[in-house]
Each structure stands twice: as C-alpha cells, then as structure tokens.
Image (cartoon, rainbow, N blue to C red):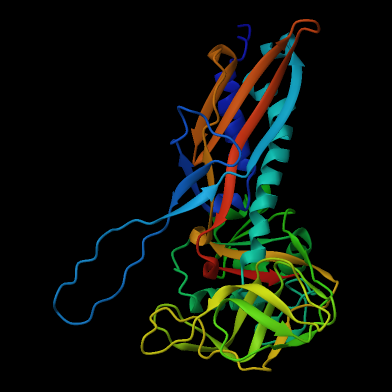
Length: 412
C-alpha cells in the first residue's frame, strides 16, 4: 500500500519523542510545563512560576502538630527560544515516518538536545559542593580526602557531600561525566554495573548504568570553567561578615575572579541543614558573578551559600562560625586554567521550565505537543517557487536552580 503523506502532527510527535530520547543530563532534572501562556502565547523574557519540592519539619512529643501543605513557587524566566530549521521537498513527505525520522528528525533533534543539555550543565557554576582534583579526571590517581580523583572514591565523596547536605537517597541521583572522565573511570566502574537488564543499554545514548547511588551518564556537553587571574590564596577582609557578599583581600591588583570559582575559608566548617550539626568538613563556596579586584587587591564577591552562623536563634545555619578577619581563603584550581565540571545532582537540584509558544492562525501548517514536561512547536511554510516545505522547530525554555546543595561538581 502506498505511503500516505506525513502530517505536521505526526512529525511534531516524532520530533519530541526523538528529542526526549537524546537528552542525557536533562532527563535527570525536574521538568515543569506551564500552560499559563497557552492562550496568549509566550516569548523570551516571560516568567513562569515553578513549584518547589515540599519540605517538612519533625515534631517531638506525642501532640500532633499538623503542617500545612503550603506549596511555594520560584519565578523562572524563559530566557531561550531553542530552534532548528530545515526544508525538504513535497515528494519527501511521502516517506514513512521511520525513514523521515532517520533522515531529518534524528540529526535535527541531536543538535537541539545537545544545546539544551549544554545550557543546563552550565548551572554547575552555581554549585558549591565539589570533589576531586582539578586537572585530574575522575578515575586517575592522586589527591587525598575529598580532593581525591581515584575511582570509585571520588564518586563516593560526591555522594557523601550530598548526604551532608540532606539530599534524599531516593534513586533520583544522577552523575554526568564527560567522555574523558568516562574513559578513565570505566575500568574502575565496570564491575559495579551488574543489572543484567541494563547491560545491553549501558552505553546507548551515553547511559552507563546505576552504581554507587547514582545513575551514570556520559555527556559531551559538560561545561568547563576558566579560573580568573586571582592569587592562589587570599584573605578575609574584615571580621563579622555574613550573608551573600564577602569582601576578600590579597587577590592581586586588578585580578579577576570568575563566576563558578570555588573556595574554602580557614576554620569555617559546613553544617547539615536538617540537624544543624558540624559535618567536620570545610564549608565550600562558589562565586556567582565575575568580579575584579581594585588596585589594592580587594574585591567584593557574590557567593553561595549565604554565610549564616548556627546558634540558638538560627534554625537554618550554613556554617559553624563566621570567617575571622585575615582568615585564609583557598581557591580550587590554578589561576587562568580551564577545568571540566562533571556534575552529580539530584532531580530537585534544578528545573527546566517550558511553556507553549503561540500557533499561527493557519493551524493546518502548525502543531504543538507536550511530553514529559517539554512543550514543542512545529511550524511549516510553503515555498511555491521551489516546491519546498520550510519547517521550524521551537522550544521556549528557562533553566533555574532550586536547591544548589543537592548537587556536587566532580572536577575533571
């Protein structure tokens, strides 16, 4: 029987299916679809409200203390309109959907999924937990403590820091590593992937399997960080500093600090957010925006987490003690050097929010589908001079961090 011409709806559904299958990092994060703009249409710069995961506290004693299920929301700006555009002749619409998918949809969705993953992995700059040795990919030898790169210790250390940050152990943790880290780690990890149902797909689409409490995947879109020109160590500039801004001296005249750089402060330890106990490990911080020191080598840094000292009146402390004036600030990594940021994360670490783009009035040549939290629009136009159909695929989306403590950079 002759093939029927493919419809725009068939092509849209197949495109969204292939896009979803090609995503590696994004599959493991929270994805929320908002239809609040479905009738009026959305555009870059629109804001949607993303639901935060619920949290509860524990009572003591026999008296019931009912907690309201008061859901909170985080505004997420839709910053990017992802798109892929191509054309083909009317004769090619007679292909069956499998052949059409192989020839056109699959390569287009491979590029689109790669860009979405790349942008999502850029959120590693906002993560302060970090393990491993910058410049030594996971699986190699070297280091000690949490600055160890041997396999599988480095991955266990990442899980430990996430445990200390009260990240749930609910089979929703993922570990995304770049190709070099996979090549170095595979020997040390291969014996841990024992699920016979998963071995056949161990390397399909970058998925390696479950081990050490993580769903491992390889993604070439792991971001890199190039450190600024700051000195290897600096010092706290002034006592009593708290909050999300920190004055630091000893950086060097006009030296730069880049967003995503990590550091620790002498005699400042991290705190478990649930029981407010000292973890026994140095608190780790990340810089949220680029900064340049003045002529005296002093700069004001925007940091995460915010410095909040535990105490009798503080229920959400982040550190055991405030930084003392002159306390040594130790940077992770060498100045002006580039390092990959492999990422361990829980699903609730961040979110990808999408919403509907408006459809043209002539719905015969446009379709929109939603699958697993991702909204995609497919629009076609006809070039009468060349008998070609021009197609554009669009996904309007925005990334946002929900709980930065529920992730950990694994240096490469």
